[in-house]
Length: 216
Image (cartoon, rainbow, N blue to C red):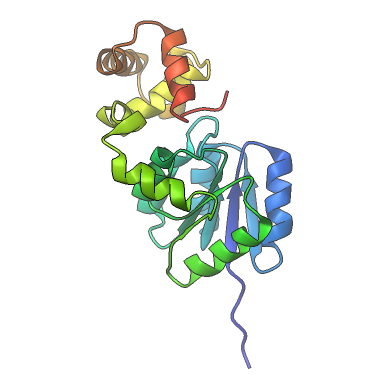
């Protein structure tokens, strides 16, 4: 008699201790096939390992979890995304689900909620931590663009460039990471400055931090 293999899970968070904590919880019912610490490594690992579930944070280096999530749903449409993050604002929850999330938990959620979330998404259901439910209903019902309204004016490529600028990457480094020319990076930077009405790299960095595009 054959048995159903356990779900394959890929973990993504930029804190090693958090990854180890996730691993201990998830391994009770799933096979952990990999663990990565930045958004670009997540994309590469997901394509290579083809997991059933992906646990990811929002604030990750090189590519934030929301934008990584959008790309993951195009690359692996059947993979379920479970966001586990420190961001409790309903606007972040909204962005995560728009990016394809099946579940959203906070890092201060109880371990049993992660287990409940995994069980729910494997059944094709959605899950939001009980710590957020009341705030979520209130926040999303009153949301009128909110903190993400300006960010949504940016293209996916512009958001990538903005995050890398905020993380201190040079124009040449960004060009190499994104496989585009330095002139194209400069063009995107100019467009970002125009859309966000910001002037300096410091202002761009502050904006990226405030909007969860980077944690550093």
